[in-house]
Length: 230
Image 1: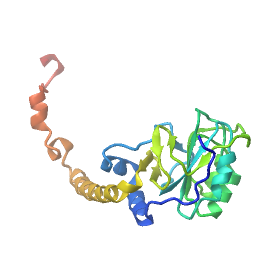
Image 2 (image 1 turned 90 degrees about the horizontal axis):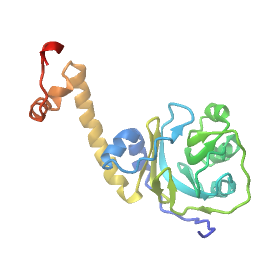
Image 3 (image 1 turned 90 degrees about the vertical axis):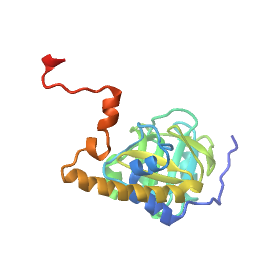
């Protein structure tokens, strides 16, 4: 691995990121063919946060947040900082002070495949973080990594500038080149779901709305009036 900072990256368009934020993680994931979803251990440190933006990536050493400090300078308004580690780690590599620095640059949130601490002040300042763990364990600044290179974060490859969508359902990564297509498909899914929601609210059930009865019958499902009739 080269210890390098890439200054100039191509970012996913802000309007596309906004469209993906509106769709949310579950819809965007479905619209993307059910790919790009980070492992389920990546959870928001406080509920209700919802973000989308282009990724500024960090490859860090476990228990060492030196390169996160380096990455702050490369961040622009609307970015999401994404941190992958060279080995599994749960140390508290990020907290209130780094969040203050990122927030001052307009960064909308952090996704880190390691630990986070200072949960209460981060919630109070409204800075969202999705992390592998919450841990008060401190870190060092001793070993170089890289900024704005491809990283693996929670099982997903992230290229600098890819669209990151995160909410209470998790984190999904949409490749920059696919963002327009996924945003369009997400919008169509939202419209379709709105129609289904109205039908379900009116009392129709999924068995009929989705035409499930005939395939269930062909699969061998039978109905009886009482347990003793089996």
